[in-house]
Image (cartoon, rainbow, N blue to C red; front, side, top):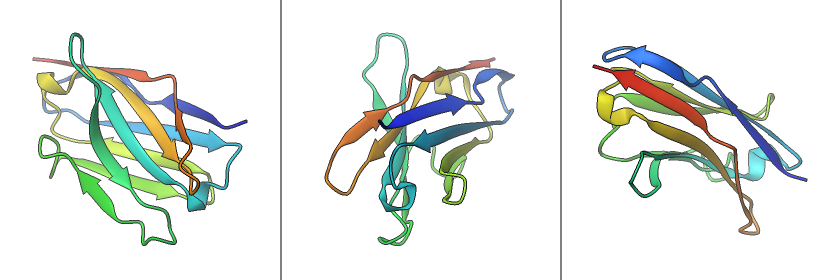
Length: 119
């Protein structure tokens, strides 16, 4: 059974930083593509950042809204993916979700962690 457990959300002032973590179990972590999504109230869930599997080079990709401020990384030894968020803005306020895509195309989601940025 694949499980994803996010942590690290919270309340921060604009300009501050947070680091989200997503611990994954039940799957061969290094073979999976990983991603972070977010969903603000009244809006659709959107992709924030992604990173390919190690076999595919661990290539990262970011949405234009977070490029230069957020960094996605993975620790394969700990089966954990991180999202370092710097220079946070009030519009970054959302529930952040971790996402796994296995080599066979199965998709799994975490329960989400709330990030609130005050102005």
